[in-house]
Amino acid sequence: MKWWVIESERFNLASKTSFRVFEAVVAQSQEMAIENLRVSDEKLDESLMAAAIQAGKIEDEFDWEPVSTLVRHMSVSSVTTQAEVAERDEVLLDMLRDHEFYLDDFRDDPQMSVGGGVYDLPKT
Image 1 (cartoon, rainbow, N blue to C red):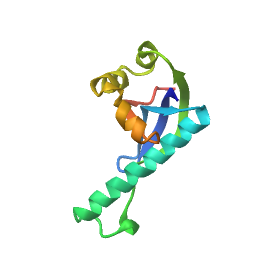
Image 2 (cartoon, one colour):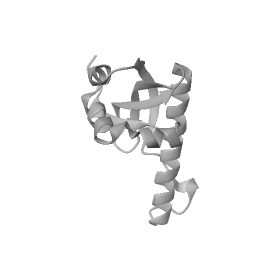
Image 3 (spheres, rainbow, N blue to C red):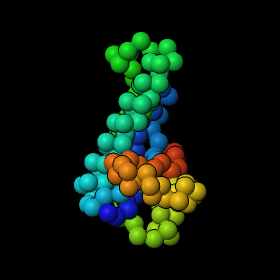
């Protein structure tokens, strides 16, 4: 398995604004990295929906609106060193270091992701 850092543009459905986010995944290929991130996003969305139902904020899955939606992947990079992760997002590197790179978690579930920094989109 290789480490990948994926920079994505997402759209916040509540504030109606776009932002960029960096996430780390493990995979054999770029295609698998993107798929693992997609599956991880689905799991997170299902978990957030279940928590909202349990808390009584919504009645059922038909009332659920995700927090954000993927617009596009801005970059997908295979990384082999901590310096390469830091070049993309130092917040992500700190998160990975603080949790010993989530090695046990990735071993148990390679279709997970670790989020790093969230940033405004660059002005064009």
